[in-house]
Amino acid sequence: MKTTALTRRDCLKALAATSIALSMSGCTASITRDHDYERPLSRKPFLAPRISDDRVVREVVGLRPYRPSGFVVKTERMSEKTVIHNYGHGGGGITLSWGSSALAVRETQGMEHRQAAVVGGGIMGLTTARLLQDAGWKVTIYTRNVARHSTSNVAAGQWAPTSVFEEGVATPAFESQFKWAARIAHHAFTNLGGPDYGVRWIENYYLDQQPFEFSYYLRELPELFASVADLGPDEHPFPVPYVRRTVTMLIEPATFLRRVSDDFLQAGGVFVVRDFADRAEVLSLVEPVIFNCTGLGAAQLFGDTELTPVKGQLLFLPPDLDIDYLTVGGGEGLLYMFPRSDALVLGGTFHIGDATTHADPEESRRIIAGHQKLFAGFRA
Image (cartoon, helix red, strand yellow):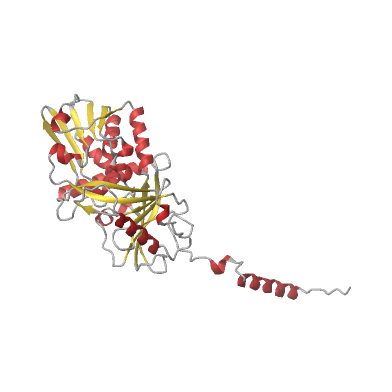
């Protein structure tokens, strides 16, 4: 058999030919991989969430307690009782919870009593009760619904104090109170980060067909959001001309509410399931100090005629753990996609004055179709 000696040059030519052949056959990732968009938190590519009608496992409706002039934190004397109000937070209930509740508890300064009733078992009632316990109070929560059946539990969960008041209607004094509550709440949630309380950092992408105006909270509270930037067309994969990125927190309501409820019980708190027909029944409670955290219930119980229900509709799909970013906007009407560990949550609606509690099939179809169109060009 005749043998042929290969020179160094021959070896290099062979290797080069092999490399070209592999590249043309698709064996090299450098030719086919997606653009490497720079992301502040993740090193993963933008993947498309799996969205279809047949993946929807639940449709839910929540009624946000909205006041154009902003939420209420104040003290009133009624029938020898001290009533401290903490309600009306619109779309910012979870976001502002610790901060607004800190404002409410601050109203107790100088009081000799250390026994309180909290009426309402949602996010405001729970955080108010926990802060009272930390201040040495004995607390009973009276609630029509336990936390898992409250409006708080059907919130989407992004930390963003949005849809809380109407600019031009709220007073400068309220805006100052709002900013204080937002800063305190943000600090509290950063101290609770991790799976125990269901709080994690995540990228959020606001999407639009028109140039952005900064929302109130991004304009007035920029220090509470990281990596805020308007992205150019080569810096994102979304099929819209205007993209604004922030980094914020995502709070998983079911996990958070369950953990805070457990903390309340472990600190000696008591839950009483009770529905109140009118103010007289509330004022008949034995506790000398009563915190009104009833949300929309304050309209009937305490005569707040400014309170307005705002209907929000969410679709729950099985969790999609490869998706590690939020989106808001990008289609016709309000749209948002939040990838929680318990579900992929799609919204949404913001129907002011609509108190109906049934899911609208037309809105569900719009939400699904809008998100499918938004992610059609993404890698599956």
